[in-house]
Length: 323
Image 1 (cartoon, rainbow, N blue to C red):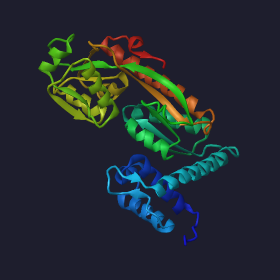
Image 2: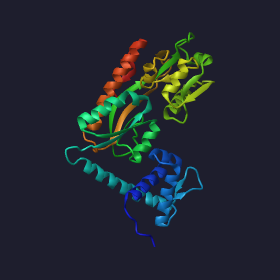
Image 3: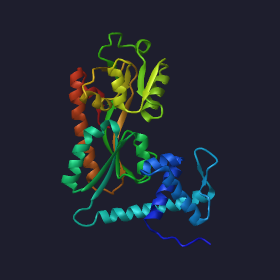
Image 4: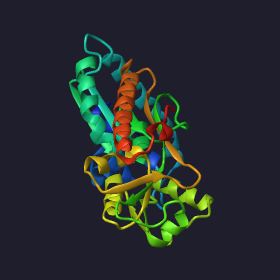
């Protein structure tokens, strides 16, 4: 007989952990997304399996897969967590201070630039008194939204496969060729550049790294030597030291300009590639706040990018556009 369950915060937390594991297929990644230890995540899972007397995951495969009982539990858990979130949202919109707590995910490359103004906007205009910002890659944002660890994200993946989101465009930006300031070789032929300089790019474990790799492959361009990193500041630092060249967007170059790294920025001498930055939030939960955040983010980023492009002689209008 299944024991009587106390619907307290521990059960809700265990459900959140289970959904995160089901979505990511790995206990380690799920624990990281939720900000808990791997052992704590495993304990939550064991508690659920003991309580209901079932096995929820097939642990003999990697990534782990849901059992039949796990599939059923996943459907019910999503419904329960959605109801809990609806309750929190409804309560949040009561009274004179409807949004007291706000959790935001941002691209690491833009977080330093955007955070101060967005925190000020949240506090001054929307009376938010508790705001948490998480900086990371776009792959982190999908998990944070799906597990409801954040209320909105500013990201480069519009997540069209995820229902129930409102999307606010911020900007679309083209990739640029980034060379060391000291480089004096050809700049209009990537094949010739790659013969002289290794390609420094985002790691293939990141979305932007995979996109860059795929684009070069489509154009039948191959960089014989590659250095990989998972943060834009690490990529630009290597280029500034003369260790290679890279392909980055203006927003990915912000930290490099702020730190006055010696870089030579030029238009990309191949067929173009671009990325979009979008604000995503669960539909109708935050009222006017998502749109105001998107408008403010657009203004800040465009201003910053126009300033840095002015230093290179490039026309910002040609590499930026509204989505």
